[in-house]
Length: 288
Image (cartoon, rainbow, N blue to C red):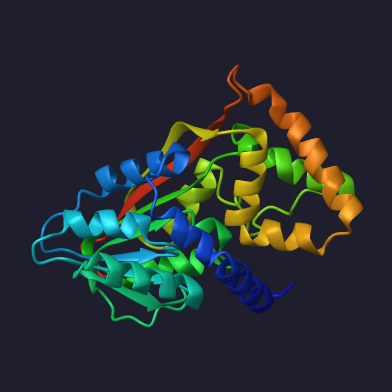
């Protein structure tokens, strides 16, 4: 699949899950995603009056927290390339009355924004899914003011995230599919710290720090875990929905069997999870 074809398919798949993401944003966030947000906000060190760009914002959970941090006088541009996601953020802004959040449709790889116009760029679980993360990081660097911060989170290595690999491994086994080629967009595409450092350095960013964040992914039950993954993961849901019923049922059965080891006595399921958090600065001098 070409990069453009992947981008359009991804846009459609994530757009189709926007309603679920919007509902989830009304609930208190828990698990690894909450840990990622906490780490990112601490690393970003946002201050009142700053201008922030959030990329691949989804329901803008991170962006709304950032909006609190930059008051008074600061603002957050919450962007996503899926129009449905941005519409969900627009509805949330209207409902909550938040005045310093602007939702906008933007492609992170082709930002229609002025150079050196933001103090910080935030991206939680976005770069790893992009067709060309190197280009996206270069664009992020372009819109940062000298000394500005880029702060991101991606999922760590697959073996450290069984909450998802239980499903992806079952799917590949059932379909006889080989593991994705290195660099293929996906949840674990940037799960190696050195790969992340290389991309950030290649985007002319400095003072690069990459940190592993150990967390947990809790669910109320095995069935709740399965349904939640299908709801929030546009590409996974699209793949499973396209399969014959027999294959989809076999994948679910194998995934639930693998996940049983993480069931607690009361029926709750708690998976270990690992995130990579990264922070880098734009040089105080313009890149050559």
